[in-house]
Structures are given as C-alpha cells and as structure tokens.
Amino acid sequence: MVLEAGWSSNSSTAESSSTHGPDSHSHSHSRPDSDPAALGRTGHTAVAIVLGVILALGFLGNLLVLLLFARFPSLRTPINLILVNISASDMLVCACGTPLSFAASVRGRWLVGPQGCRWYGFANTCFGIVSLVSLSILSYERYCAVLRSTQANVSDFRKARLCVAGSWLYALLWSLPPFLGWSSYGLEGAGTTCSVQWHQRTASSISYVVCLFIFCLLLPLVLMVLCYSRIFCAVRRVARINLTLAQRRENHILLMVVSMVTCYLLCWMPYGVVALVATFGKVGAVSPLVSMVPSVLAKSSTVFNPIIYVLLNSQVRGRGAGAGLGHAASYAVTFAAEFFFPPVHCSSVGWRSG
Image (cartoon, rainbow, N blue to C red; front, side, top):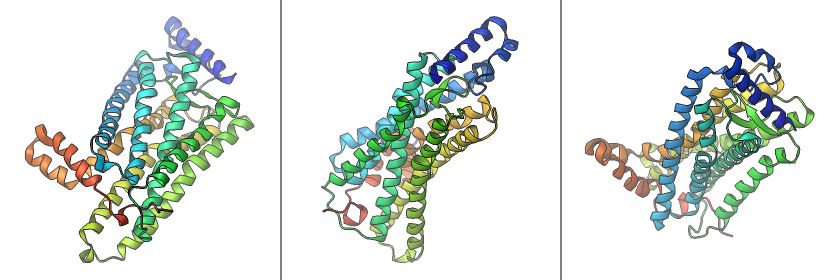
C-alpha cells in the first residue's frame, strides 16, 4: 500500500541521514513532503517544545471542564452536553494523538510504525471533525435561542444526546474511508506526524480531499457564519439600555461561543488551505517545513476552548487580579461553574421539546 511505501521511504531517509550525513537525502525525493531531516535537530526540538506545551495545557484544561461537569449536577444541561462533547474530543486528541507526534519530534523521526501512523491520522481526523461539527451545532442552538426564543425543557437531553451521537457518527463516516481504500493515512510534513495523504494525485485521493474539505470544514463553517451573522444583526437592533440581566448573560455566552468558533477556525483553516495546495498545486509546492506550521497550529485548537471558558468571565478576571495568582485558580473554577454554566432558563437553550 501507499502508506507502507511512504513509511519505508521515510525510515530509509532517516537512516541514511544518520549514517551518511545531510548530502545523502538526494536519494529519497519520492516523498519530498515527508523528510525528517528537513527541520534539523533544532527544528524538531522547537516543535517538540510547542507540542509538549499544547499537550499539557490541552489535556489539563479540558480535564478541568469535564471535572466541573461531573462535580456540579446543576451544570448538566443540554447545551453544556455539547460543550462537554467538544472538551472530550479535544482531550482525546491530547491523550491519543499528540503524545505520538511529541515523541516523534523528540527523536526526530516517526517511532510507532505504519499501524501507529494510521491510528494517529484517523484519531486526529475523527476527533477534529467531532469538535467542528459540535461547534456548528452550538451555532444553530444559539440561533434558535436568540432569534426564535424557543421554549425548551432543560431536563430533556434527548435531542442533545442525538446531536452528540450524530457528531461522532458523522466523524466516523468521513474518517474511516482511508481504511477502506478511499485515500490513505500516512506520514506528512517532516516525518513526525501522520494525516490524510494530501500529496497523492490519484482520483481516489483527490476526490476524498475535496469531499473532506467541503463536508467537514466548509459546510460547518457556512452554517456557523449564517447563524452568527443573523444573530449579530438582531442583537445590534436591540438598544443596550433595554437589555435585561438575562439578555446580557445570554449575549455574554454568545460571545464565548463565537470566540470558540473563531479560535478553532484560525487553527484549522490554514491546515485546510495547505492541504488543498498540496493536492492541487505543483509537486513539492508545500515543503516539510511549511506543512509543519499549520499541523502544529491545528493541534493548538485543543488549548483554546477551556481557556475561553475562564478568560471571558469578567468576574474571574476582577477577583483573580485582586486575590493574586495564588487564589486565581480557585476563583476560576468557582465562577466558571456559576457564570458560564448557570441553571439555564427557557430562553437560554434552543432545544425544542417534541
């Protein structure tokens, strides 16, 4: 298969590099997009440091969100179930994917063979799609709550659970095909990460890349843009002086969700653009060094959501500054629970019963 060929080429490149020096790389141009020597020792070390920070912050931050949900029963509302789904998928990226690329960057080469490469590519693709689909669901929920003032039974989790299950089924629908012969997973960039084989020019690979871009990035993005643009147009028509406390809180939560979406897209859009350039541009248009930047940036998306939960809370900022760094963490936990996950009234949640 293509993956084994790519793996063998990459391994032989690394071995020849360690044995004969940098000049020997001229014999492995069959995979110009996957060359461990392209970054050099300093480059691999820098990537390892960044991935280590992403791994620690992403795992701990999303774990905190899950612990808050488990600790406080009042947080268990339908809308929060979608937020928890995002945190769970992000934490799975940190637990199942990032450690492999971190270890590979430390050693300067992929360490767990072609099967591990397939798993890494599948896991990052699947969990990333889950997060993006969940964010688009959040945008539609806010649209229903703000513009339609939808009545909802906040104890009814049926539709929220269906949305969570649907996000995972949709992600599996688009991440499993490379195992079934529609494109493949393999080494990318500097040979320390794995993903869909963007560089392949076969009809199968190109069609998969196009479908993945349209159905897993573009369509959710269009849905989010439409929902939030209509929400912002409606909010601007409301005089700020007439806003009730509940409306202000709802707008603040809306700001939190929009910030989550913006950060996520800033992390993933460069990766999608580079993938399209690698697929349709001239051979070698995307160098290993260039491809590593959006790859690492995409992984950083796991860090931002739990940070946004806290930093958008003015109460946390004010009290944290007054109490000092020693008490900031406890204030963050307390007020994140009370402010960002309040007992939700009918206008705060867009799940319609029946």
